[in-house]
Length: 453
Length: 139
Image: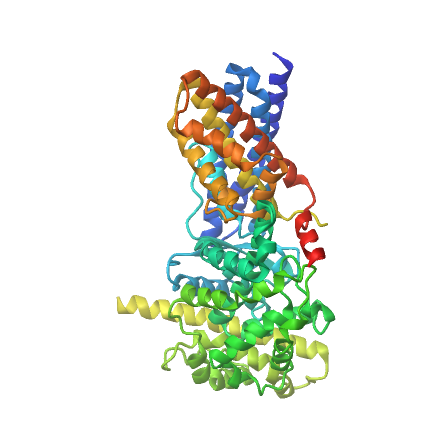
């Protein structure tokens, strides 16, 4: 056997074994744990893709045998296939860790339902990834679908990537929480942006903003440099889209959760709040968008008088003069700011006529407050009001947690609101009751639907 | 400089897969005269390259992102040169022998593109193209 061919055969065998291991891992996990339907579909996709990949590897070797002068090409092909599987490998383990004992299942079911109600997203489902990162925003996966489609197009007879399948990552420490997990709505935004190809909608506005603000300096750039400028604006625009999407679908709970996370990471109040980086616009800009949308959707009047610092911080950060925003390449900032309206419009058309949830909050806030204050799961009034209770639960419970936790701690014998351990225990219970209420509402709604049909 | 993220790597790999598909379609054409898959891939490539050379964002996923455009740029080949080559293949210019020779050139190009995408996938992310730095210094 010529050396080049035996080298190719060696490479193909190594890739085969790698793929085989991942498929066997998925198969084993499916039989050992309970997963949501979306995760099972993802594992099935990987297993099927594995079968077609193994056949493809053999066909590469067969082709190389009949055309040895092209062996260097086939070796490159194998290297690509191996790297692609290495990327899938990155997702398989966190997805395997996302079984039902590790995740806030009722909250995720609620989110899936909200997602399904949006235009063109009926039937959308979510695969849960358990991440070692505390920061939800650092786990990037929104390009997986496009990448998987390319893989399916390249490997003959491979399965198509399951339709409307999104991925969200939860820090492993936050599986049982509700409030911090409101940040997941931002991740859902990335899924929606990718799934509905919103980048394409923004392309014209991006090019036009660059041409208007940079003029000749932009038009005289090389094609790769122009692409860099467009890409940078598109990245910031997508982040802004995700924030506004999250805020529209989940309400101020998303702003509160953002403040909580930034506070935990020690990123609040630093001078960096005005700085763009290559992945995100500055917090000051992001919170100014929060502030505007909260006012537009009537939320602001209802939350500004809260005793917690959160609304004050949103307002303060949002009030930073855009002239103070900084970036290494300052020229791009005015071009990005020109996109504000286009992004807002894009969010509006994406969510369609979806109610931002304020009316439900107004109707149910006191009721939820009273329940939680007495240690009662706030689902007993389900089906009794004009607005759905589930839509108001998260925001009402979050407001309770921020403003009235001490009141509840005081009510419990031998507990002291100034003792961190006591507060922490009661906060955990408030989240549990909220999660239970979401589960109850979900079950009761399904029950009423089945009775009606 | 920072290590490339999974998302960035997937952009490079999407391009590598596209290049691989095109190379294989071209090999099939040279070997068996199978024209249809080649035409489909070349049309996709041609549309993207034309949009890029006009300073527009490609609508085709394989060339939609900066990392993918950068890979093409890293090959030091003018898009116009490749556009002309692909155009001649799609227009069936020349005798069969000439067409095969053009197909071989295209195979070489797409194989290089796949290799460059794999190479960039491994490299730490380069933040800013030089031209942008110059632009900001002169303003």
